[in-house]
Length: 86
Image (tube, rainbow, N blue to C red; front, side, top):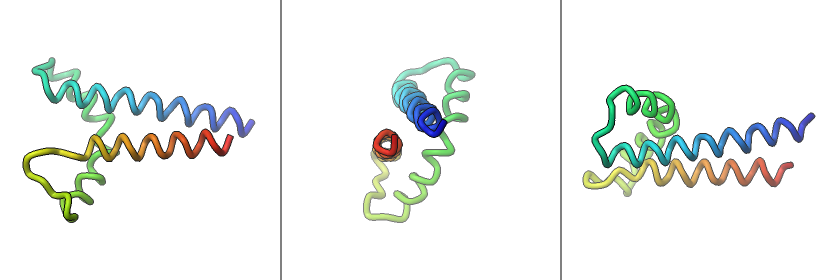
């Protein structure tokens, strides 16, 4: 039973990684507003706290938004953590 929960969390983090990747790609290209809004709605709960922490740190850069990179690292860490617990 507990292994299924860990497997579900592992798959959940893979899906979040894909959504984050789509977010980064759609930020470079002019894409349909509806699709972009959906991706932003799904990924903003992860990126908003990271942006807040970056805003109040030494990594506050007005030229580049590093929050997707740091969000990706956090997701990878959590994914590996739940994989090891399995």
